[in-house]
Length: 274
Image 1 (tube, rainbow, N blue to C red):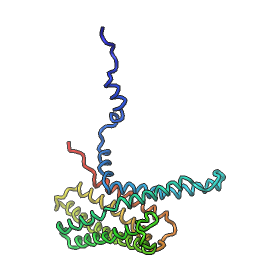
Image 2: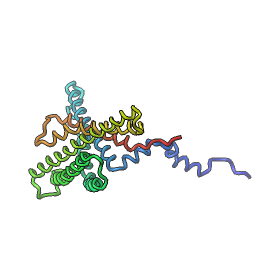
Image 3: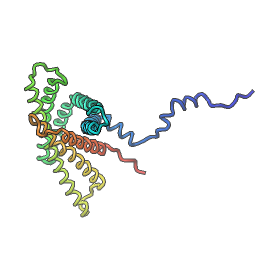
Image 4: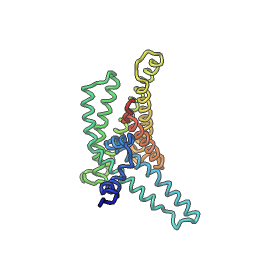
C-alpha cells in the first residue's frame, strides 16, 4: 500500500529552523556593516554616536517632564527615562575609554611606519610626526586620569588634584592632535582641488570618481574634527568654558555622526563591474 503524500521531515525543520535565514537575502550593506562595526574604530564611532545621542536626548526628555508637570499632566517634574539615559551614557563613556586602552600601540606602529615610508612633503611629514608625539603624551595622561578617578579608582597614590591635571593635559594633547589633523586635511583638500583643475583641463589622468570620493571623505573628517574643537576647548579648562553641557554634547553628536559617515564611506567596497 502506497504511503500517503505529506510534508517530509526535512521540510519541517527547514521551515521551522531555517526560516529566518531564508528570508534574509545576501546584502552588501549588511556585509559592509559587519566589516565596519567589527573594527575597533567602527565600534568606537558607533558607541560615541549612541553616547552623545542619549546625552542630547536626556535633557530634552527632562524638559518635557517639567512642562507636563507645570501643565498638571504629571505628578512630579522628574523623568525616569532621562535618568536612565544619563546612566547609560556614562557606561558607554567608560566602555569607550577601556576599549581604547591599547590605542597607543597603533600610534607607535604608525610612527614607525611613517619613518619607513615618508610622504613627499616635508611639512606633511613633520605634522604627522607631531600628531603621533601628541598622542604619546595623551594616552599615558588619559589613563592616569581615568584609573585615578572615581569611575575606576585603581591608582590610589594619585591625588585628585594630580588626576585633574593629568586629565586637563591629556585633553590639550588630544586638542593638539585634532588641530594638526585639520591642518593636514586642509593641505590635502588643496592638493585635490589642484588635481581637479588639472583634470578639467585634460592635464591629469586621475580617476574622477576616486577624486570625488576622497573629497567627500575629507569633508566628513573636517566636520568631525572642527566640531570637536569647541568641546576640547571646554574640557581643557578647569571648570570648563560653557555652563550648559547641552551644546558640547550636541557638537559631540555632530562629530560622531560625521566620523561614522566618513568611516562608512571610506570602507565601502564598490560593487563588482558587470
